[in-house]
Each structure stands twice: as C-alpha cells, then as structure tokens.
Length: 87
Picture (spheres, rainbow, N blue to C red):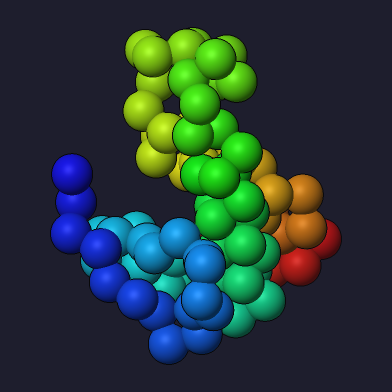
C-alpha cells in the first residue's frame, strides 16, 4: 500500500492521499484539487465495503476512489492542452 501523508488542508477524518496522488493533482487548479480530495475521501468511506463496488473485490478501494474523484473533477473542469480549465 502506498505511503500516506496528511495534506495541509486535511481535516480530521479525511482520508489521506498518497504522495504520488498529491503530485499528480498538483497541476489542477486549487478548486479542482479540493473537489478531487473531497470526492476521493467520500468514495473511500462509501466503497470501503467491497459489496458496494461494481467490481467487488476485483477493484481496490483506492482504485475506485481515484475513478470517482477524477469523474467529479471532470464534471467541472476540462483539460485544455496541458492545463485544466473550468468548463
């Protein structure tokens, strides 16, 4: 399992992101990072039980949380070249 770190804006009870994930979302605007972190945290809690996941035990809860978080970001932002911009 990847090493976790607590982000600067993490609140008690929020799920910590791996360093690799933090690095990956650094290119997002601040608001989009907030969306990602909130959606990821909620998804980890929601899909902790494998029976709630479409793939069951085939998909790791982190994998599901990443998909949910990116989907949440993509509802409000799109990639324009190498930058993320509000839709």
